[in-house]
Image 1: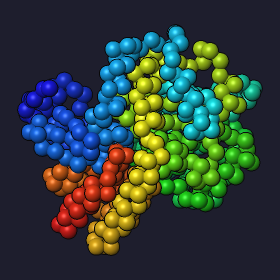
Image 2: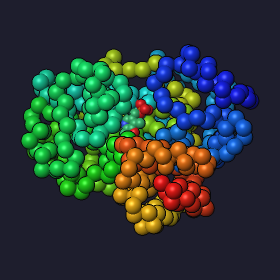
Image 3: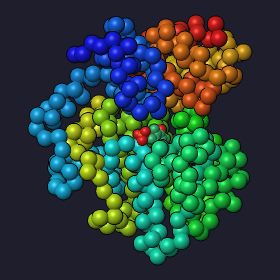
Image 4: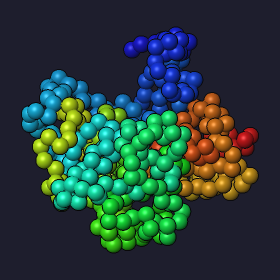
Amino acid sequence: MTTSSATDVRALESQHVLQIYRRFPIVLERGDGMRVFDEHGRGYLDFISGIGVASLGHAHPGLARAIAAQATQLIHTSNLYFHPLQGELAARLAALTGLDRAFFCNSGTEAIEACLKFARRYWHARGETTRTKFVAFTHAFHGRTMGSLSVTWDDHYRAPFQPLIPGVTFADANDPGALASLVDADTAAIIVEPVQGEGGVRPISTALASAIRAACERTGTLLIADEVQSGSFRTGEFLASPTFGLSPDLVALGKALGAGVPVGAAMLSEKVAEAAAPGDHGTTYGGNLLACRAALVFLNTVDAGMRASMAATSAHLFHGLRGLADRHPDAVAEVRGAGLIAGLDLKNDASAVVNAALERGLLVNRTSTTVIRMLPPYIVTTAEVDEALDILDAVLATA
Ligand SMILES: *Cc1c(COP(=O)(O)O)cnc(C)c1O
């Protein structure tokens, strides 16, 4: 184990690491369950879990054992050869999503790239070569690579990298009636996060879900669900889409699925999958043994017992957050979310509250300027929820 002073860490980074992250001023060296520890051994209650990734908490013994064992056996083969774990993981994901084919990759943005490409590939295979457009939504976040960025809404992320891929329009997520006019016979796919994450923890409305279904039925356009953040049981069910009445043709997965090991997946319906042929797309690392092993441990660990506990903890969390909203009406505008993704939307910039929470030993983050976002590991208990709520209560009292 290394112990390095925060000053050394920061000095070295400031010289050699590309300066594109605004980091909190702590150096994390170790984790255990719901907690991470800095270089002085100070513990923090982790309610962000590396942006929804450390879904089983930190240093999970079963995951650690499995990936250590896998590392001593075989980590990587590339996709030139078969190995025993891709098919096994794909079958599990097919059963969970109702989509029969998996393409494995290493991140959320790659899963989105794959979905965008396979949507285009589908129409191309059908001879509809002008059917290339995508319709996304206001406040959407789909990733940072050029394709994903093209369907990401925030102009701060987009502007420096224009021109992005053409033919993308953004429908107002708050105006379901406006969607129909943007979707036509040249729309390859609509892409939606059922619960917008980076956009401020905003579940789509039932009216928007109906408008999406109607547009798909009217034009035959494909539906891509970005479940990188909302999926993998984060909102309760494996996918959030069906709870909104949506049946996507393609689904992007990432974040929680690897429990900390980089894993992404694009799930495709058989109809879309049939259009793809060898050579159309690919990846060197995607679906390697280590990544598949981690995802299988994740799926085995999130059993009925854990899901029941998550549901109870979620209810406790949202009850508590609504209590906070009642006690601090001048500070809190709204509570949003589902399962173990929660947003406390403040009336002002959330930075001060996030920083004060960190000083008191609680990790949460700010998104969409005013929103305090919580994405705790799935092992979170009601006692830990109370601990987090107490800290937020104290911080909001001084906000
Ligand atoms: C995080 C996220 C992505 C991008 O995932 P990366 O692993 O950072 O590339 C895409 N879509 C949604 C909804 C996300 O939350």
